[in-house]
Image (cartoon, one colour):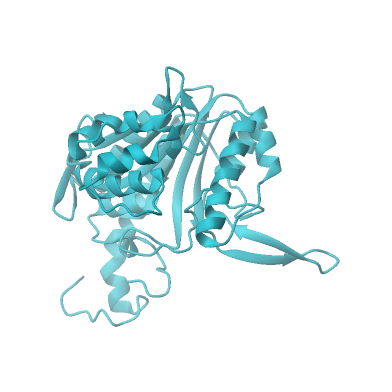
Length: 351
């Protein structure tokens, strides 16, 4: 923030808007460069619907709800999407091969230096290609963003990353062993987590309560011990997530304890989340029902299943996809201190 500018002024005051202009200029440059790269690679840029029957069926994802009225005046509940994933997979089932979207998405119960309730998610899919392909894409996109602004390194909260360096490839199991001293795979039975085993292994490393599930304990270790160590010096690709933590990813053929899911980190910040996509509709339904049962237990609500999406899962080809937090990438590539500085109109209570 420029010296002398009162932070109590609204973001739209001329002085404060001028203070954000360099970051917004970087956003324009990054958008232009990334769009050009996807076009060169033969991707089709799509625009999918924001209002959805179901916003997603993961336990801890929360979506704003609204109501429409049909021609007879009856109330029709709808949700603002948390991701364009459901619509994108319907397009894959319809025959699209390579698609990308700069999607406006919404998350309730999320607000902070790295979280906005409304943000831009850059999401793309490749039909008939493994998840290594979109993993490589994501690393290239990050480098293109840095190149577009001319920034030599990402810097955030005391961590430095060279966005042009060869990325670090690290399995989740190796990360848990290295940073927390936990043999993660020994706590997974088939595709299910052994809660007692992980609670015992994590004892003394994180606070475990009687109500914590296997996934809760996993998340605590990840957040407290693993994520702060990732993306230091170079980008980290964290891959082979445990099967219980991969709601929409297919299991690894050689080891069903893990799935074809990866995340990418820079300066300890999660930038991207990608999958080798699950195409087993029955398994997808089972996972969704399980997640909604847990959501109902914890939060007293559940989201409907999108039957059209489940039908598309059964019809779509083998594919891979990734969602990248575009605002976070712009923040790192522009040198901004927090995410509000890189969006044109911050939400109420923002910078």
